[in-house]
Each structure stands twice: as structure tokens, then as C-alpha cells.
Image 1 (spheres, rainbow, N blue to C red):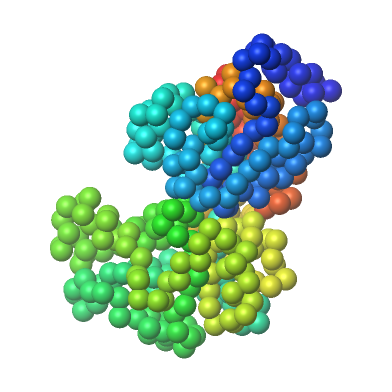
Image 2 (cartoon, rainbow, N blue to C red):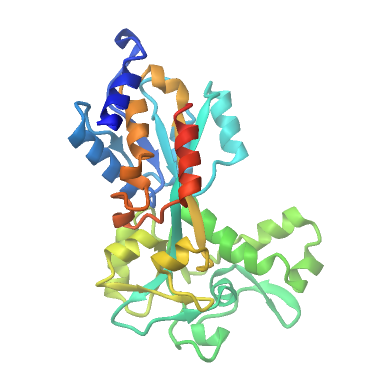
Length: 334
């Protein structure tokens, strides 16, 4: 009752004549998309407003659309599986978007998965780096990746050809994977330190993904990756934890640094490839879109992203209680 009254109250603060439309529009991350879509459906069922329209465009693609301008033709929110970049903030500012609200809705793990028809992989972060980086250390030098099979990296690994389906450069999942696996494994290696003493140059080299066919750009469609893994038991795929949860009858997640990609390990910070998930709000649209404030209130509610919220049952790793309260308090001041 309290939440319903609050939603009614905040939507009455702005004269109806100022609104350009009543339906929220969102773009962005394919990882965050399922969570915000479920929240949109709940919002549509429990309010008189139309269900928000949410599109999966990838994090980078979402920010490009989000930052194009102010007005009813432009998106109100942008979902992201990484924090907004300074270059994206500059683009927004250039186009008159000067007041952006950042909402951390929870956490996610990036999974390295394969078909259940095959043996589960047990990998280290360093082995994943050696499999997928464009440049790797070998015999004291930095060279183009020569590894063709997993067993070339470590004899204990399968003799399968390295074939990994993953997200495109516009994806926040790709950005997070590069940061948490490639950069983390590479930046302090003596071979890279010696050849690239400039940190900015070294970071760029360490971030390069191989382009010889071992890494396959699967686009912004994690369901497509799951489908490919089901067809080819020797391939692996990279996607968010929620897709592992929703397809656990078909695929399995690799153990990384001795930790399984489980809800408990990700929420405890033990699983090494974990990241925060965000929703960015164009605050200037509160006077343009009638239901925007009410939808954001729904999205950050205990019912949605709390420990027992409906999004945790979809695979979202919830924020600790103290952090959740802080997010909710900050959001109400938007």
C-alpha cells in the first residue's frame, strides 16, 4: 500500500501538460535486459501505465542512443553491464544531457560455459587469457597468440581446438571480460612491462582479443551462444550468470580459479570474474515521460532487487542490505 501511494504521489508532482509521452523507453546491455524487462512487465501489470519498452542493444550501443539528446524521441534509461565511460558522459553533455542518474541494481558473474554433453572445464584466469588474448608471452617475448588447442596451454586441458563464442566490442560483458581477465592477467607480466613501459600502451595491447577465429563474435544475443554450445560440445561461450541459470539443463559453467560460478560464490566475491550491473536514467526526462519516476521506484524496490526480490529468482545477484538502502535513498532524490 505504501509503495502504491508513493508512486501515485510522485507522478502527481509534475503537471500532466508537460509530459510528451507516458511509456518509458530503455536500451542497453543484453545482460541487464532480462532483469529490466521483468521489472517492466511487473510494473505494467500492477499499474495503470503502459509496460515500458526495453531493447537489447548492447551497453555501448545503448549509450550511443541514450546520449543522442533530450526529448520524447530519445530513450529514458540505458542498461549497462559496466560503468559509463568518460567519453560517453562527454557525448551526453554535448547533446544537452547534463543530469544522469546512476543506479547499481546488483551483481553478475561472467561465465565460461560449455555443453553438458562434454566434460566440465576447470580453468585459471591465466589460462583463459592465454587462450583468448591476441598477444601472449612466450620464451621471454610478446608474440601473436600461437595456441591452437587448449592442451597447447596446459597438458591437463582437453585437446579440443580453442573455439569460444563471445560478445562483440559494443558489449559491456566484453568490456568487463577484457578488464577482469585479459588486463588482470597481463598488465604485470614481465614481458609486457619490458616491451610496453607506457601503461596506457600496455593496457591497449593487453586488451586485444585474438582475431584468428578462436574467438567468435556472437553479437548481442546470449541465447544464440547457448544454442551454438548445444550444437557443438567442443566449443565454449561467454555470457552472464543469469543465462547459465536459465539454461542449466543445457550448459554448465567452468570452474575458474577453483571457484564455481554459483550465486553464493558471486555474491561473496569469491568467483573472480564478477561485475556490477547498472541502469542509467536521464533525469531531465522526468518532466517528459509521465511514468518514468514511478518505474524507477519499482526497479529499486525491495520487491524487485531486494534479497528475496523477484529479480533474484531470475539470476540477479542482490546488493548487500546496506548498499541497497543507499541506492534506494539516492534514487529517491533524482
